[in-house]
Image (cartoon, rainbow, N blue to C red; front, side, top):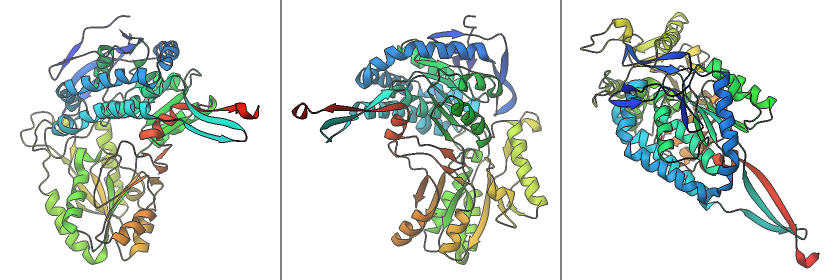
Length: 496
């Protein structure tokens, strides 16, 4: 089936169909995509992929593999740089669509988040071109380690920051020589369709980049279990990752997963308390729907009261409202089901004897004209748990819910910070350089920030410990994941 007429979203014409082998194809069945800004608004009826769609996309990627791999890093780099240029040219359009589709703040999207997608493409084009093979001599042979393109890759991305996170996975796969099938989250699929338009405009060879939309439970298994797939990369929940990991194991396919976090934000008495409190209040950004957020506030007991006073003052300035309004700091959550899930955490915390220090209730913004049940805002919430074993401490909420605990010394601080099964990120505030090294090194996390937050270097390894993930993205780590490493040994002619 060919492409159906495009729909207008935020003034931008968006295809609701798959992108396979350089062509738009539709499905006989669709799923509704609604806007979190007003749940009564249906943005589009999007083609729902099935096993046949997955097969077509994987066949296109497999057919494209030899030609794309043969180009080498220098031959592939111009395509990635052209993609980057097109992202830069279309930032306003992509931001407009993603704002209504996912409800991230428009100011963040247009000024930072979408542009990061362009930087991802440029960074990996350069990293792949600059790679130098490791060479050495031993046992009478000259040795080289080569990176060989591995084959078709399937990448499955989450509903938060979907465009940027798609490019974060797509760029290294393409730079390494692997055609890609992207499966975007069904709760925010539209910016992936725009990315397919850009790939088409950049003249990527047919099949090098494909987009298959659909419900995860329906189209995910045929995509992840197919033996033609040689790399799998996933961002989402540990529960889904276990299914994808089993499919990867069945076909002996390398698999990387970024699975969320329960980051600690540790504040010592010698810290800049104002900076720490401001950073802590900022964890409510995007309604807490950020995997790297420091959701467990751990504060030295001697300054706990002062910290809370400063923290509440900063939270009191937060504005819950429309994502298009630059004054808004807290946006709606993605979906009514997700709001209900987050509310469930708060309700169970109260039932377990935890104390809600602020928030915990739904919010209808001033001037709201829709049905109250369609307003997906939850007030920024802070909970003092009765025990470190409380569910709200130990499990990822992924909403505007933080916990507050105090500690007496470094030993207790580290023990509390490392007490969950997660290990994606941690944040530490201290005025002591020695403590920064000592405690920063002891915190169990894939990334630890000291006296800063969410500062990212695209060449640094990114990933989690424990149930926060498997493998590493970023820099050469991602390029090597997408490659088959080969050692070539040639006997020295002088010893022949």
